Length: 251
Ligand SMILES: Nc1ncnc2c1ncn2[C@@H]1O[C@H](COP(=O)(O)OP(=O)(O)O)[C@@H](O)[C@H]1O
Ligand SMILES: [Mg+2]
Image 1 (cartoon, rainbow, N blue to C red):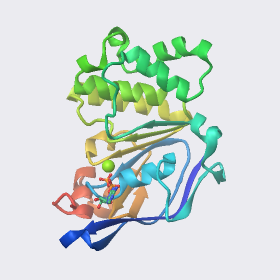
Image 2 (spheres, rainbow, N blue to C red; image 1 turned 45 degrees about the vertical axis):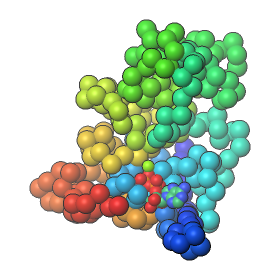
Image 3 (cartoon, rainbow, N blue to C red; image 1 turned 180 degrees about the vertical axis):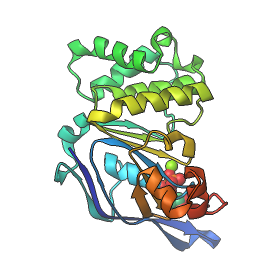
Image 4 (cartoon, helix red, strand yellow; image 1 turned 90 degrees about the vertical axis):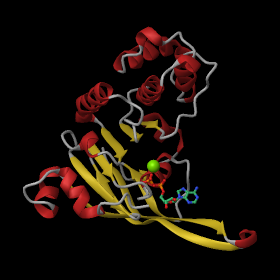
């Protein structure tokens, strides 16, 4: 089981200036190469580094300018790939009038999970994120943390072999962060989990490898202990982050 990313490039063109006649090109990904086997990977970088762009391309919602995404050596697309993919997006585009249960059942249908398996699968993923008691409330009444957990539950539908989470701890309280971290760590043995974050503590103790992404390029990808040896001997991942990305947030 492996996810291979080869020479991925993506530039955004944006209009600028007077009458928006100018065009600026932003190279969001500048030749990303990665090979991931089973395990938990932290995709770490400041805001604007290109994490969400990389994830959008892997999940198929954005086309790359060039390069390849391969799942077990074959192009990662189509319904076959969607079945093995679980994706938790950064933004919460939720349906306020739905109940949690209806939302998950809807997402399960999009994943083409057989309808007779849906109720059991919805209960299972809700249990994983501790939302069982809230499933029949409307989403309008959910807190930010509950919405975040519901998105995570929907990413877990169908027990995906490739699980991709974009800033999953945003809006979670410290207890929920720890719980999420432990849940992901416990799931990483027989699947590939990629967690994009700019929060060092989300991945420091649980990541098989941390991928350092800066201005669309992979600076390094290695276990935390090796990154510490290379960039901040005697320190921790926080010091690695500061050494590689500087004190600013990279914007
Ligand atoms: N739709 C877009 N149009 C123009 N520029 C974009 C768009 N999305 C992202 N960018 C730019 O691409 C760069 C990478 O953004 P993004 O992938 O969202 O980074 P991250 O998720 O690491 O914060 C940033 O400079 C951002 O401003
Ligand atoms: Mg992002």
